[in-house]
Each structure stands twice: as structure tokens, then as C-alpha cells.
Image 1 (spheres, rainbow, N blue to C red):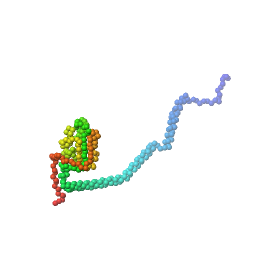
Image 2 (cartoon, helix red, strand yellow):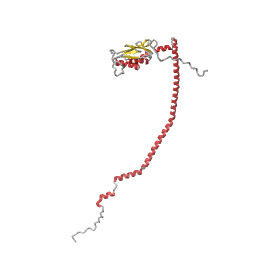
Image 3 (spheres, one colour):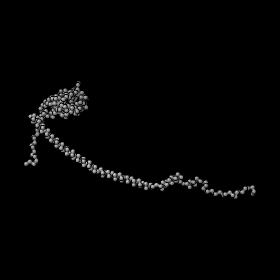
Image 4 (tube, rainbow, N blue to C red):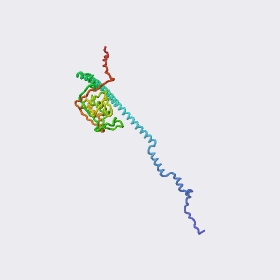
Length: 304
């Protein structure tokens, strides 16, 4: 038919379409299953592995280096120990020598003390004989059996002003009511403080104290050897007048008396005396002790 146009014989034929042309996204996923970022990272790791050392080899090298360092430290410590051992031994030996020298010096001093003690005893005996006395006289002086005099101190203690006669008992009792009165326990501490401070003889209101004396209370009165005392209490003590007073004030019992003054109004005065005179004890009875017979001199070893 002449009215219809014929297709051109020069047109090139089209390639046949792929069967999965309609599934282009799925095809792309199948052909490129690994993301490009992961692929690049893997490539970098391969390049680094090829250029550097394997990880296991690096770990072994690090361990070997640590062991070498530890061995070096141990070796250095052992060397220092060997070097310091002679020094320590020398110091130890020197310390031993110092201790031995100190022991020998102590032995010499102990012998000197024994020699001086014997010399003092001999001088005391010579002094007693020079004054026509003997050991018995010294015992009589110290025991209170005879009158004594010499330098010392005078301590006058009195009750507080306006003190009453009520509320007795020791101050340690919970039921004690302060009356400003001096107690027997207070006087005991005062006397003991004087003895400890160096007093050689003590009397209270003319009553000589001995090793058998007792200070007690009867109501509000203070008794010395069962004899009542009336305040003010005059305490005389023979001793070094320059040292006895300060030593007593610094002692615990002297501080106790000061507390009585501050807290309870007890009054006292202390003075050094060039001469104090103490009477002999009124009664000195020994019930148990007896004089020991002198021992016979033992024969020396090796004597025929």
C-alpha cells in the first residue's frame, strides 16, 4: 500500500534488555555487597600490616624488654647490697665496741660508788667519836628519843576565818560539807610532804613525831599520838632551811596545801628559821624490834 511509510533500513538494532533490568537496586546490592567505607578500612589495615611488624611479634618484643629491665633492676639491687654489707658489718662492730666500753665504764663507776659509800660511813663514825657520841646517839636523834635543834622551817597552818565546827569527815567523802576546818587527812599530807622534802625531825604544836606517831581525828579535833591539838597548828621541821621550804612547796603535798588555801580558805605561812628546837618524844615504845647482835668477822679464804 502506497500510503504507509516503510521503516528505515539504516537504523541500528537495539541490544536486548536484561532480564533483571527492572531490579536494578537489587542488582547493585548483589554486585557491591561490601560497603565502600569498610573496603577502604580493610585496605588501610592490609597496607599497615605489610609495612609494620605483626602484633604477636610486637607483644613478644615488649615482654622481652620488660624482662630485661626487671633483670637489670634486680642485678643493680644485688650489687648495692654486696657493696653495703661491709659498711653495715663495720657499723655493727663499732656499736658492739661502744656497748662494751660503756659496760666497763659502768663497772668502774659502781666500784667508785662502793668506795665512796664506805668512806662516808667511816667519816660518820669518826665524827660521832670526835663529839663523844656513837651510833646509838645518832639513832636517838633520828628516832625522836632526844631533843634536837638546828636550822629549818616554821609552817603555821590555821582554819579559815569564820569556820564552824560542823560537817566533819574527810574531804573525799561525798557527804562532806566544807566548814573551812583543817582535817586530820590534811595534816597527814603536810607532814608526809615535809619528810619527803628532806626534814630530819618534825613536831606539831610541841608534839615530836616519830616513826610510830599517828595523826587521827576525834570529831573536829586533830589528835597526834592521842593528844588533841588546837589551831593554829605550828609545824617545825629541822633541815636545810634554804632547800626544805622550796622543796615542800614544789611537792605534791605542798601544792595540795595551796589548793586548800585557794578553794577552802585554809590559811598558812612558811618561813625559814636559823634555829628551831624540837622536844623529845613523850613516849617511845618499841614492842617488836630488838637490836641485832653484830656478826662475827668471817675468816678470809685461804687463811690457815
